[in-house]
Image (cartoon, rainbow, N blue to C red; front, side, top):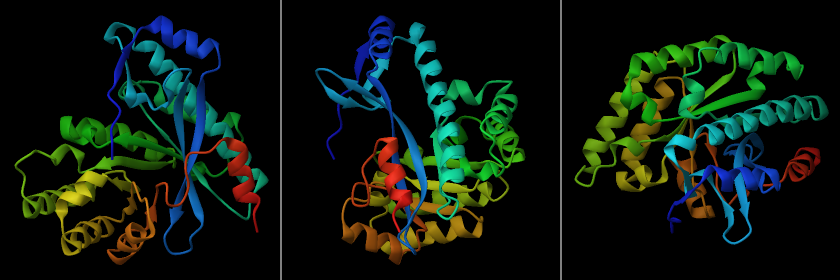
Length: 273
């Protein structure tokens, strides 16, 4: 997979993009590998750049002193995700779908985060909080386990779904051996057994570095022992989807199933018989 080199932008350019309506929200379905139905959709921020096309946040960097604007924009994605979660559950009660949205580091550190989330649930008349999921990067668990656990417990107490994204990415040092990587993951899930966590998304490069299906199956089994669902990320063809099924992954996300879509396309997906 080719990665786009991040580009440094000034706050003024990002503000211009916001004012011109270039910052858009897309939603990518996450598929249940058993039923084949979309059970989650991930809310994604994209910059519809006039010269570079659609850019993910990781493809552009904001000056460190100006990053507060990107954090505010990120929270606007959270607000929109909560609105969509409430609307889709009311409009399509027979096709329940959970809307997942990423939390920035600064969002997770907010002291009033519980109040903000509770307000979103009440304002959008969300009766079942588990229609809303919050994703946090796996790097949080590397930096400070106890603080992260406490912050995620706050979210769990609100009964929303808690997701760890890019699991395994922090262990991808150049010299790590596949067996050591597998052992690291199994050990990490032993710790996560007591963490307020519902879902993990496996980093695609982490999966490739495990090399064999037996190692990957051991990691998935460890996640299930911790009562955590496993998502295979970056699934681009049927062979990858079948491999994910064989090792016991519960869910899958990738272009093989669906690309990020405008909200009206998700309406059509949920309305389909």
